[in-house]
Image (cartoon, rainbow over all chains, first blue to last red; front, side, top):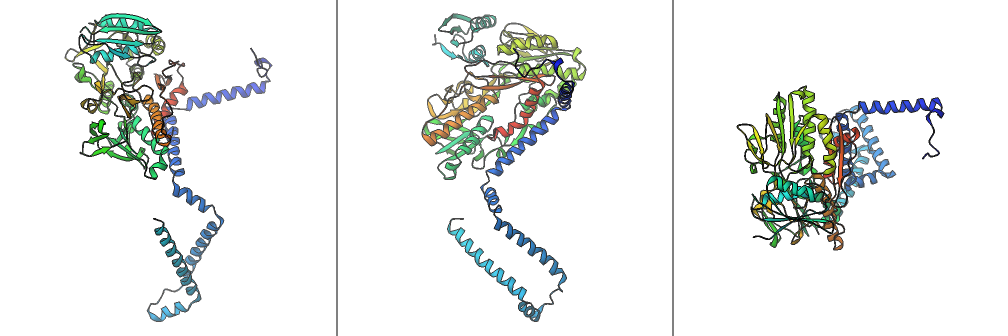
Length: 140
Length: 76
Length: 377
């Protein structure tokens, strides 16, 4: 019983036949190259990969974190944080070391940059404190 | 004389009815009777072959509704 | 609802992990508590023992930490049970603790008892424990000539082991270049070379081709260690240079001590997998008295059914399916080839011709096993 897709070998164009032969040689070469050790290591890696994937996808914290990271505003904030750290890392080494004493302290306190920074810390501290009380109230 | 102990090995291929029988024979006492139930075609011949070679007794061997009922007494 | 799993082997681990996944919401809501008790903190991949016996695996590769294989929600203790009080739904462990349960899963497995055959423990090599497998490999390395005799006790776990063993021996001695100096003689207790008819039919010409001698209807009665002769109930005997035995087995001692089953085999319903007379006790793996092969495969499929049923009983009040007797076993046929036997209560095995890809599947499975006991495969 033949189907429409079956063709007698001698009616096949030489190119197709050549390609078939090459493919068969490739498969044989692959089979010959495979060893117990290769199969064992491949299967081992795949199994460990599966275990890890299972753990990760069932880790609620990680999944939640991924969702949060996906938000544009989160990304912008992370970039802003990174930029700020970068700028600070340039500025601090260039500034002369503090001389100590009340005078230097007053000089630094007068600096608008410092006041901005203190304000940020204060606002940030206020919100973090509020957040912590909320979490505690919810049973965290 | 004690009652027959039923060894129900119907519909099993591995380790199979005869191996199940051997397992139960080992735990039985001399004089005990076991009745093996098997749906394996070959049991009718395989089981008596083993029983006789090892030295126990076949009491009865019949096929009822496609199931072999083979009664064996542990003789040693 | 307290679920207690006793035994941390293949069956027990799969039941526990499957239940932990299916009942994760109930466990989080503290409606269900899942506990496992095991005699060991390690989990052994037992099929690896044959590889150890031929020097293809080292013993450390057989083990993983049991805790690393279990879901975090499982309360796991290395504290073997010593007393079962099924009428009071409780067990007492070695450390003296009492664990009460609503549902119990027995998965204690089986052990070898070579001492049942006079002389076997002293005179025969075996590969059914780590120590004995290593000892057997060392002897295989040293032997120069003579008869290597293989005998089989009843019952034993892994029914295909005798055949895999002799094929392995043939390949091993060939590789050592001394196959012509070694006579391999195989002895089997029933009237053909293997209990599965299809395996016996396929293997016989292979035995002839490999020059493996065999004697059927050979039930080991004793091993004469001094004269190096193994004798049968039937009155025949075989002298040997090296004897390899697959010893007879019993269920764990604790099962016998607690009168839970003759020989340590617990009377189990072949479909529901509940213990006869105790509907809240399930039994999986080697320790059942079922006429089902004592294999990791059977334990795996039984565990799937039991965990599904326990979960459905908790969620909807009834079990949902029966065990159909399914077993799936690889058969290594030597020479980097393998085939497999799959069967259940209704369908006999139908062996395919051995092939290299099947051998690779077995190699891959040696690694995938750890993923499957975690409940992922």
